[in-house]
Amino acid sequence: MDYKRITIVCGHYGSGKTNVALNMAYEQKESGKDVSIADLDIVNPYFRTKDSIDELNRRGINLICSDYAGTNLDIPALPDEMYSITDNKHKSFVLDIGGDDRGALALGRLAPAIIKENNYSMIAIINMYRPLTRDTDSTVEVLREIEYAGGINFTAIINNSNLGADTTAQDVIASLPYAEKISKAMNLPVIATSVNEKLKNELIGKISNLYTMNLQNSLINKEC
Image (cartoon, rainbow, N blue to C red; front, side, top):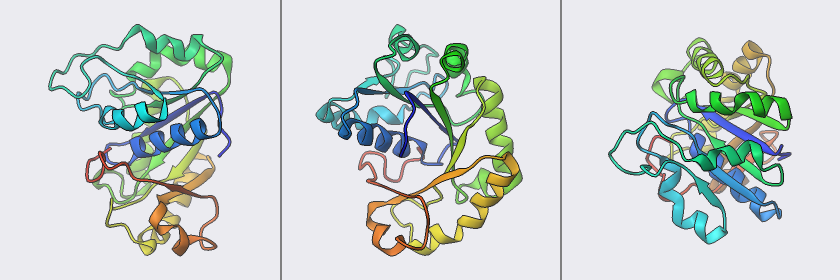
């Protein structure tokens, strides 16, 4: 995948955005980039990215998140380190943004500087198998709310329609018309369909722009 310096990953709860964000950070690290991942959800106290802290440490990827991440304390605060995202032009960053308009509020603090630099992508992660994003209208409504709260418009879509570890190749194929409808409604390209690495051989040649991922063991069966 072609990455900008800042990759912003957004989607509704259960879209799988955190799994996508983590895999993007891993891919960039493996390509030789100095990359950090930031969890900027200041509303939801269950910071899923920190569930993979051991794997991030093993790979040498810095995690930026609240000191209260992974606790039961709902304190809307982020560390000063978050400003390195816009200040340190020599590093790459993957931003895991909250799952609704409230969760995207922290992005608004950085939006003016991100837009001014103009070296970013804002990717909508969509999943037709989640209760609140099963159709075009409801999905677009959620994404527009995130855009408004975060102060940045989406630049692309990744179709991450899945049923967790139970996802079949047919489940993924069945989601393609849904993704195309979202693409047309928002006038945005679907740059990838992301799938578990285990489904790769079944889907090669059937889906263009296939993006294979390893599901994080700490996130399986969690809505992230």
